[in-house]
Image (cartoon, rainbow, N blue to C red):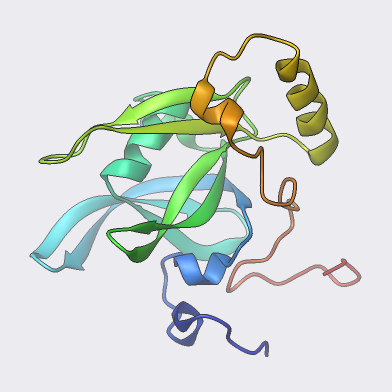
Length: 180
């Protein structure tokens, strides 16, 4: 059993946690989307929960992540099944949070705005995730073109290239003989 590095790893449950992702961006394929009764600070609420192939962990759909899914894949939830999303660990109000980075199923980066109650709109970019070599070629091509999205052009493409497709999450088993 691996040694825990983050607090979230000490208390695993059925939902993905930011600490379990660490510094990696993880791409998963959506298996299903259901409604779940989740208990929060203000009592029980019905929220969407996304299930993935290859892991028992789910992603509860808060407003931000739900808006990201809708912007990438449309309002018809059954159409999300089979789509791939790339997740990463971020912060929300100083607390760790799982966020959507983008999808290999996007043709190009997509600028979106997340509007939350009693908050300023949050501009975000849903990234068209590509294998490392394709992403670098895309970056060189974009560098020769006028900037369409200044906030994206000013930042790094990724921390360390794209994540391996087989990066294991808690509850996932690696295939024997796979690198790791």
